[in-house]
Figure (cartoon, rainbow, N blue to C red):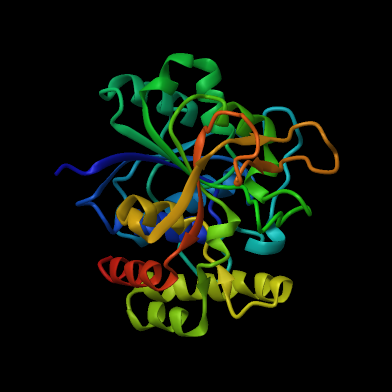
Length: 313
């Protein structure tokens, strides 16, 4: 069976970095056509730099990295240095990247790739705000039906919000973009906070990363140690949620996750609930389902997969 073709759209971010590393460690199953970067956790000049740092950490400097949109469609950029540090990859000390940034804009790469590859063969994996994906769909409406699947990290239902009382960060940063993507008709699978808050990096799990003994394993342990200080204080949990790697893990072992095919609408107007993912989990409306919204994860299986794959790099 041939590897699944994917584009990772990202705003690294320590957990984005781990998601990218998991994909790059799994070439038999996943063919990373390119990594497209967007402003989110930190501004665009840092997200594209961080993506290249991660590729070089993985020993994969041949991966193509593209810079995309530097601001949301209709709003000022909100960032998350309070979680990820001023670089977005605070924790380990990693060398500056030497691999080149691709000259093509990320949105153009997404459009051109979806047009060039056979319809239904490219999966989009957004790990940050959906600005690049929405912009591509706006500029080239013909590409949405060509997408095999969109597997994204974003939103929440039972876990409500992590940047406001009602909204998860990725959706809140660019709710208009999220609205475009969720209305696109493309098959969507969502990894919300309801799942990611069950994938906690406990001390034992982090020590398993460190025990790999490689530069990748040690760097991942240092990354998670850095950003977990914020979440442990905020949630009172024994570890930090490892959000974005849930996307990659789903591509590799979908049986680790369970959810429902439901309707999700994005709030774009209310100042109180802006960016809320209004998930019809109980199917109490007649709105047509537009995504598979995950609700649970086998956390032990998830971390076993992650540790085993990171050890390959």
